[in-house]
Image (cartoon, rainbow, N blue to C red; front, top):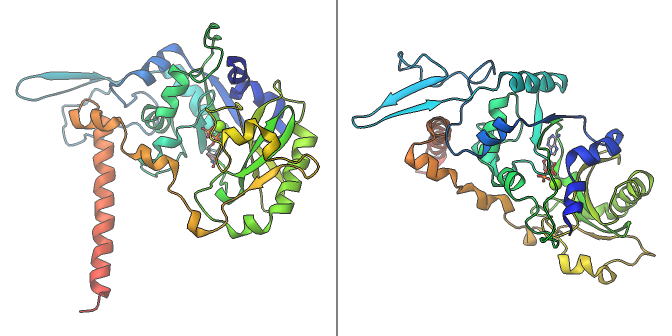
Length: 344
Ligand SMILES: Nc1ncnc2c1ncn2[C@@H]1O[C@H](COP(=O)(O)OP(=O)(O)O)[C@@H](O)[C@H]1O
Ligand SMILES: [Mg+2]
């Protein structure tokens, strides 16, 4: 995989080409001070006009300045200055409104899929810039985009291409995970299709292998093949209940992209898996036995615990404790219910 291939898979490169076949989205340039804020391990909360960012420390009435919040213990006084991005905030809110009020956020390549555990709704659905910041600041995938997008490229000696960072807001869409597939294209041929959520067994996917392959192949021939600047790439699709296929994402053909139910060895030496007469190889999870833990589970013990334990990131700590409290209450309720129904 070359740096150029990574450059071509940026959202702002492929979105204009495939606009008609994907989810409606808005691309906003990410200002330098916002990039710095995202990379900074300090404060989380954003002040200003963003409707969801009321400070959560109402018990302490002298903490009334949103931008300059102070609290102290016996020895030290820490001042946290919540950053303000008024212009950017209003652009983001405008875009969120234009997309129906609920969005799925990404950077140039990645969504913060590893961070959804921290959101109070355990979802990537965002309504405000502070929702987006909470996810982005907690995500290693986002940090990867910002700090080392070319890390696995083979042409390490060539200079890194300049990147203009962008916030991508996509209209929130309820995608049924069983309808998502990853498609591997080598030399402009669709060689393999994998169920994207391979951790689950979906009986209907197994049963519908033929129509799925047919619909995806037709979509590829009609709309994707020869339209992308590279001849090797990976595209993700969603096939809805009517058999219509939508483009979800484009990814580089290489190790940075999860090969799901294939291996990169197989994909690179594609002769082994694809017989061009018969069309692409198709793989899905075929029984409960093979169900695997979700790959993002390992991200649930995140670096942010360092912030939380040192108390440096006070708002993240507050959000986290609130979340824990509500989870505890839920499980206490469940236990009570269980006790009530348990045989004496
Ligand atoms: N607009 C959207 N609304 C809701 N969920 C989405 C949306 N776009 C993508 N998703 C979900 O998020 C997952 C990851 O999205 P994707 O754009 O491929 O990010 P990444 O490249 O970081 O994996 C998809 O598999 C899909 O389940
Ligand atoms: Mg992707």
